[in-house]
Image (cartoon, rainbow over all chains, first blue to last red; front, side, top):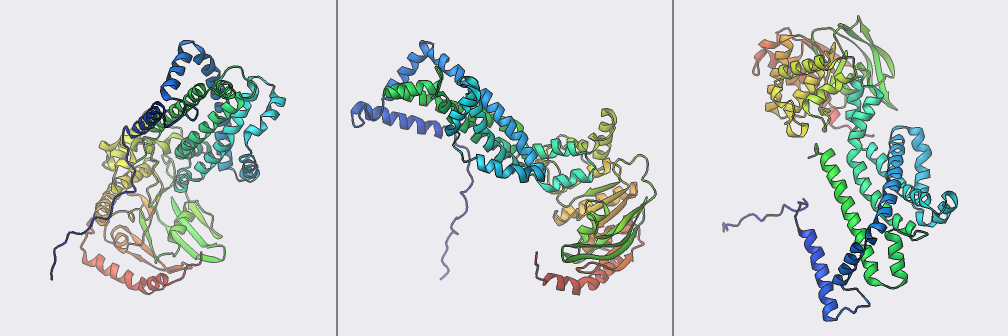
Length: 263
Length: 255
């Protein structure tokens, strides 16, 4: 009659915790699998280059000094282009978030610009800014600008209105409310938008370098691709991935510093 | 400085929330406003402090606030409204920074109000590290820092559990006894009203108008948790409001 049974646990889950090393393990397993497959032979050398060959190509690139010759201009382009685009994007995004008139005028425009594949506009930029560096800066700036605007004004919209009312009730000046309440409150959203913008920046960097660049990771990949040199192609792609991971880690570090007040 | 409300009416679109409210807020006393939910008591408070404009009528300020007042009409909010990225002392400093106060006297003011609200040890803490009661103490300290002529308190204890509420009520009483301040205290909790109010304004349900104003002469510091006289008052208030509260509860909201 009275059967003793423990109550079944049905809570838990849905709470991501940080697990160290799992990410690296996935990389190692995947690369190990490819290495094994190409050595044993069930993956042919035409489908995938052998990871160890890619690595030795990278070492060659490094020791010949060519790595830096390709990487330095790429980083410079990304730095200049992305800083222009992101700072303009944050500025315009905050204005859109704060002023109804600017919002009414610019939101449709940004929505119209956002879906345009910026790569398609590269010829236009070349006509406007010339074939040299400026057109590449412009392409990256333009590409990072639109997503930054969208994420910034979304973040400003999400600032707790009761905090702004509080500021007004203590007679804080408009400038104080913006710099001390709105901007810090929007910072989490702005920073997560930054991750997306920078990834788009890397994509556009390669696109820009595929058209009229002597040096740069994009040019290196293009050259390898047209020669069907898979080892060099994969070396270039791996460098891009490392760039992406590094940037994401840097943004994560900034988040940790600036957003230490979050739970 | 006294405040007068003159024939205040307010509506949101078609819905009239407040109807012809005239009221005087004498200085040095705590005036409680109670009423069934949705009767517009919080709206009334926002109108008094100029965070919202009444549809008709006006709030008159009689006399000028004391010279050392930094922000004459100061709110204490139900949800505390602390900036989560600023420590306790920086949250208080926020409301002093826009005024012509030098660093030394700012620090002095902060130290003073933190001592008055028993927060001295929590100076560097972030809001997320504090309990609800502590957060509201910080908000109270911030309000005291600007030396308000009138404190406008919008259900300040409603987000807290009942034990914390008791503790904070004691704190409010001792703060007032040491240095009487003027306050308009909006609450739906009748016990808070009879413990803290020198006079209690009962609003009817929407559109809110004044049904009755009762005064309690017993000094704040002599009022106790279980107090026959206060219980009588509370019972009286409840009987006054009961029907209306029931009707308000069953109202369909069309917003």
